[in-house]
Length: 211
Image (tube, rainbow, N blue to C red):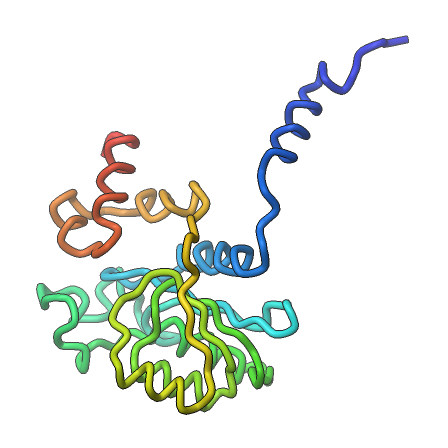
């Protein structure tokens, strides 16, 4: 008869590690998932994702990229994204759909109501997406990073009774923070120029990975 214990098989250390990790609250849980969804984005400029939640259940997800059936942005599908247009310019020529837009239309495509839901987004919504959020009946927007929330955007959401709040103190899971580098084919200068607020993190992770 073997007298080995669970500790000998490494189960006790694993259990101890799990016990040491704090259980995430609901906001952190859904934002973490949004950042995992973001790794599916095919936009060559910026990766963004959205998760729509109702009664603490995920009813739809979306990430930014070219429309269904159109060549992926990172494969040259969007001429504007493939160009050297400065960030925030030429947006009228961009054919990529935003994450919020895709998550809302995905729900509609499958006949799922978004009335009264909360949307978790990795980047604050633009004016167009804010209008879609209002018309979709979504009651709350929770975002991680702030891109460019204009006063007009805030005013529309406020007047429509939609709560807009940033998830302060949020820290992404380690694997998610490094995930964008694994398929990244940009040189470091290109990453620095196009990755926005992720520049410092990207450079640190690149050094760690020897990229």
